[in-house]
Length: 152
Image (cartoon, rainbow, N blue to C red):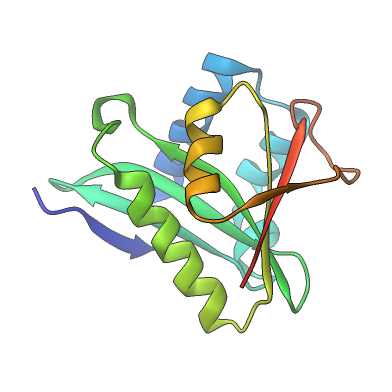
C-alpha cells in the first residue's frame, strides 16, 4: 500500500470535486466560488500555471490538493482533502511535499493559503511546514478567517 503522488489526470476530476465537497459540506457549505472552481478547473487552476496533485492508494484516489498561480512569485495552496477512510496515514504530508516541490520548481517565492480556525488539524499541518499567520486579504470565501504564508 505504498501511496503514489500523481499530477492532474482528467479522469480524476470528479474525485477532486467529490473529496473537496465532502469536507466542505462536513464543516461549512459549498460556496459559489467553490462551484466556479469545480466547474472550471482548467481555467481556474491548470491553464494559468497551477497544478492538482492526487494521492493514489491501492488504485484509489485517497487525497488531493491544488496549487493555484497567484502571480509570478506566489502560489496558493488550495482544496487540500483526504478521504475519511485514509485520514491518519500522513497522506497530507505527501501532498504538501508535492506542493512545496512544485512551487520551488516554478521559482516561486511564497505559498499562501486561506483556511478557517475550526480546521485545527489542517492549521497544525500548515504550521509544521512553516506557514505563519498574516493579515487577511480580501478573498472570495466567507468561511476563510485565517490567511497563512510560507516564504520559500
